Length: 366
Ligand code: NAD
Image (cartoon, rainbow, N blue to C red; front, side, top):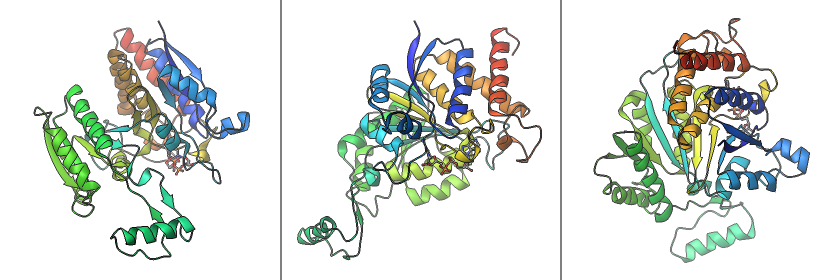
């Protein structure tokens, strides 16, 4: 029986790269019935809503979605539709594997680490008070009354909540992932020496959870030290688990270590459902040009196949992508030594080359 998966093509370059990905997934032989749904600007144009109920209902029903990037509309109530989706479905864990593939031009080789980012709390919880508003002034007074310092009245305030509940489930997620995929070490990342009641709590809960996993090494590092150590010796890290803001910053940095946004996949998991998407945005400058690199969305689809239990198909698809990258011929402009290389191929032609590899594997040639 076919799996039913919600497919959100997104906008900008999203429709091209998700279509290329859909064709490659089909070539693995895994039967998937895609339910195409809109979100973001295309949805706003069609239905008057950025996140139509039909889209949410489809994700709720299918429990698995592959999503193209969505441009964040300026001047609407939404900070970001991506953040809204994570909050609506309680997708508490953001997974971003950062693996170097031979053929990708990067300053580093042999990097193979996984960033596990808490997705719902911290400074991204969206609890903010605008400078000069009565609410903000009341909060400033209240904080002083409660024994805190007097905050300057011309300040804006963002709240940083970190809970035992959400920390334990994200750290558990990181350890479970390490166990399932044979990873050796989980490193928890905080600034616990300064923010004792939030990052300090994250660290304390991490230490407690780590005791339940004696078979996996546990390590702790301060986020500023991590920045330096990642630049010096990224191969020393395995699984990193971080609160939301540090996770956001460090996962982009780790993507940079393995060749940039064009090759960085991602997934957002809740207890019940999961949404798979590239780390990069909609690259609107290149929309409709059949130009950008589809690898990040394709590798996100590899994560999706693993999530569906289609491990063999996932492995084959990853190998086919890696082989095309290693050969370096039928790849997009960003993977060539020079960006104006005339031998670069388009998004759709790179997908064709990967499909060809999958067919060769099936025929026993590769
Ligand atoms: P971006 O990721 O779209 O682009 C950043 C740079 O990377 C650009 O130079 C772009 O050309 C390049 N790039 C991105 N994807 C590429 C690919 N597949 N192949 C080759 N090059 C690629 O970031 P941005 O310009 O800051 O954001 C554009 C829009 O996307 C914004 O509205 C932003 O809010 C949104 N966004 C969405 C998501 C998401 O949907 N998950 C994530 C990030 C940004």
